[in-house]
Length: 317
Image (cartoon, rainbow, N blue to C red; front, side, top):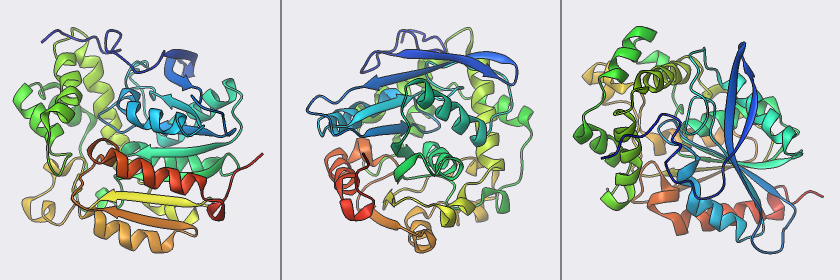
C-alpha cells in the first residue's frame, strides 16, 4: 500500500479543494474546503457539512451529490487538524474550530447556512449553532458522539498517553477492524477505503504530527462536552442516529464494567431530544455510526425532507 502524506495531497477528493489561510494561536494554518454549486436550478440555500473525528470531507461525496442535485450549494471543509488542512500542534477547542468555520463562511460571503454534522462534527455543529444562532437556519446532527459526558465514566488521560497510543496504532488489521465497527453490517467496499487513509498515513515520515493532532482532538472531545448545549439550540434540529451505533471514543480507557454501560446511542438520543426546543429524532434500524454511507438513500431522503419542510423553519430570502 502506497504511503500517504498527512495532508492527503494525493488522495482523491470528489470536488476541487481550495484553501483559506489564517492564524491559530500564532501559527499560520491552511483550512481546506470544497465549495460545490447546485447542479440544478439553485434554491438559494447553502448547506455546511462538518466531518467526524476519523474522516475528512472526502467521505461526503454522496451527500454532496444528493444536496446539489436538490438545488443546494454545499460547503464541505476539513477542520484544521484533519484531512488536507494543516496539522498544528496546539490546543484544539470546539470554540476555535467553530470560529474558523465562521471565518471560512465570511470569506465565501455566506451569511446563513443549514448545517449537517456527523460524529465529532455533530459536536462541532452544535457548538457552532450555539455560538452563531443567527447564521444557522436548520441543524442536522448525524450520530453525534458526546450524547453522554465521558468525563463521568472514563478516567482522564494525559496528552502524552494519548499521543503514545496514537503512535502505536499502526497495525493495518486493527485499523480495518476499527473502521468496520462503525457499521451494523460491515462491507469492505465501504469501510475499506476509509481505513486505507489511516493505514497509508501511518507509513508517512510525518505520521507523528498526524498522531499528535489526533491525540489532541481526542482530548478536546473528552474535555469539552456538547451535551449541555442541546437544550439551548434555537433552530429546528433533526437528530439522526443508527439503531446499532455504539461508538464511544476513548472507551478503551474505561473499566470493563463501565465500558459495557457506554454507547447506548439510540437510547441516549431518545432522552436527549425531549429537551431540544424544536427537535426531531429519527432512529434508523439496522444501521451503525455512519448512516450517510451505510444507508445513504434513506439518510438523504430524511435530510432533504427536513431541509425542505417549511413548517420546520422554511427557506430564507
